[in-house]
Length: 126
Image (cartoon, one colour):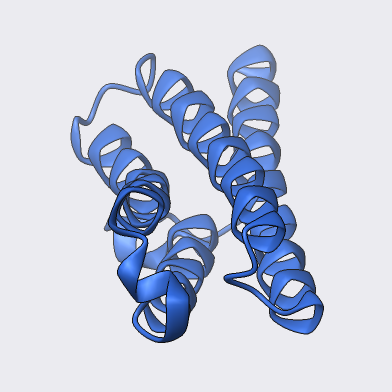
């Protein structure tokens, strides 16, 4: 962690959340998923919330607030994973598509927690 992050776009958690959001939008744009407006819109909002909270927390410029925004991002990721089960059960996702999205969502969900821990370690070491 020697390099200082200057903008939110440099944060790995945000980059991965962006990839997840793109995958969610692509997946929800076709087939029966595209017609289930409630679930489609909710799962998209959850995905966008992950990357948005990472960006907002970082841009506030208050190190004391950033961990809280990372917690919100992590919670949004859990919400998205839960909605993936709904989409699978409703027949909007194949098992393969579900597994791909779930794998990416699980990875994205771990990153804000790791970043929070790193921030706390740095704070404790200061």
